[in-house]
Image (cartoon, rainbow, N blue to C red; front, side):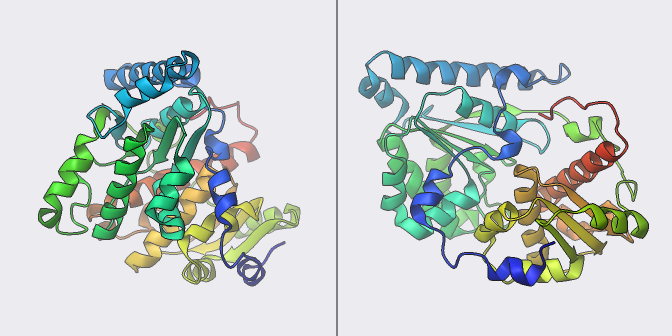
Length: 358
């Protein structure tokens, strides 16, 4: 198995820009998502409306590609005008990422798909103009989990958006926060009113209501149900392959603080399974945010996760984290952990196949 020290030591010191850009595709969990396998909740009509609108966007992009009038139609989509971007707003677990990946899969090439964190890191690596050049000519740029944590993120995101729209690129994003409230509680919005209004005005907002679909597949309060006991963990370790990562929770949390979060992708891609002993409550906000980011990468790449714990899943983060400025991130993390731990539990018990998640 892989140990933490070896995993960290083997990470490339700096990502290759060309490889980074070439990797702008949906991660494994969402790579095959289509509109046909998105199942809207009939109790929330906004889900069906959003799916229908995105089908129209995909059709518009295909028509522009097939009709030989790309420049003229791209001008309708770009130039910073309202409607040139599409913004999927909704809580976690309502299918936003599924729909974004479906839009990417059913749009003409070339297109790009990346997370907002990857976009910010790419801008830091290549600069605004370099990133603009990297996506110039793409018909669609899909950005998952658009969030503004600080004024620097806001300025970089706005500069990128201006350039992409001026180049006629269609930009689609997902977020847990409506555009006008981006950054609330994280920095002084009043100092950046004009910037936030400009960013908001660039998007057609599709609101998606609904419940977290994971609670329709797993228990709403899993407690310790999906955690392994020590004997089960020993058995899992005995069956683990050479690319399995085994670590204690405190050691793993500390290791995540040693590398830039953008390197978590490389960490996750180096392992086939993650086995963690001794989950315990997280007291530090920064440790918590790093764990959230790491879980996001495990989830996106469908890496199996197993853990032992002396506490319930809902006790991982203090209530102040869940009710604070980053509350939606922490709640999403718990939801995704619930799904990943439940997936392993379902596999172990050979339960009937579960319909694909939205």
